[in-house]
Length: 196
Image (cartoon, rainbow, N blue to C red; front, side):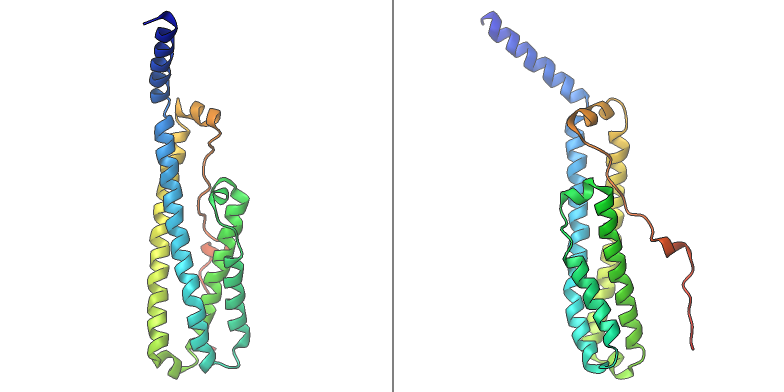
């Protein structure tokens, strides 16, 4: 083997050893885990958004004069659907916060819609409405599970990427910590219940 080839082999071998000790591969795996868990959160949010039109249509048949609530739910769904959600959201805390706020608005609007149904005993007894409500409840549970998995994946990625020597590798390749979910501003306040 000529000296040039030996040098190239040596450089390749040293580079492999250096890269394997810097955490590059593990950073990639953990980054993909965050992306995959985020995709599952989006999947569950999409499932919820897909249920909304059916739920609104069933309620419309019973609650003609509840137009404001129906409009709010439809607007909240449109706001969520109008957001561009891709990997860029995971890299930008401001976009992540905007997405989180839109989902909170959707949750709030759906809560008001379900509250409206309490005023219509026939609606609560409607089989289609009950089925949709059960599906929505199951979806909310799936959202909670998916968000929890995302939170865990982000914690794992952020913890790993902030350790030495991975922190150096992350800086060199431009990987930053990922934003995580946080409680809504009103989450620390107990909800007010009134039977007036």
